[in-house]
Image (tube, rainbow, N blue to C red; front, top):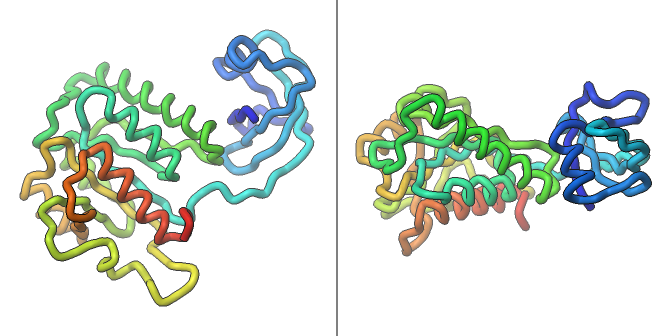
Amino acid sequence: MHRFFVDKSLVENNIARITGDDAKHLEKVLRLKAGDTIEVVVGEEHEYLGEIAAMEGNNHQVKLFEHRNIQRESPLNITLYQGLPKSSKMEFIIQKAVELGVARIVPVINKRSVVQLKTSKDQQKKQERWQKIAYEASKQSKRLRIPKITFPVEFNEALNNLSEEVQVVAYEDEKSWGLKDLPFINKNKEPKTLVASIGLWVGPEGGFTQDEIDRIKEKEGYTVALGPRILRTETAGLALIAMMQYESGDLGG
């Protein structure tokens, strides 16, 4: 069933209005019509079933008739700090990270990043494209919330603006610590408990410099190995997210 997000300001008396590009997509691409049933998420909080009541240009009216109390979001608030990769890898990472339930993605320009978005115009163009991918992935995966994709930031700026309780870094040179060794993962209680919010760090193709690793550790960050094989940047972050979501009880835990 097709899913749409609407702002609270567009809902009155159980009638939601779908406008703009979503309205065009509903009519021209999906070819839905009056009487069809769709899913509507209001204010990234409430999920409804709705029936298309009227279609007027780019302003379609949907009658909300069933509130659905389904827990779609992870109990763990994850921010992915992703070292900026080459080509279209970032689009793939965003799409899959959203499906896995992250709350926010911060594209990071590391010292070894090959891609350098130096102008504000370049950054804005990329951010708008990435946010659209996150929006579509949220609809496809039945999310209640649309993760925020920030503008690309330099490593130092990302590190200086941390808001999560702890930071975990996927680091290929870590030899002794894995996820099971992290002190905030409680293995003796059910359900498993983690901190409320966590930052996950993945380097670009060239990896982190030792100085970058040291600086994250200064912020009480933990470096972890993800196994005996070296994972590509587009694999490492997704594997780390999935492991953390499992520990939180979100993915099969």
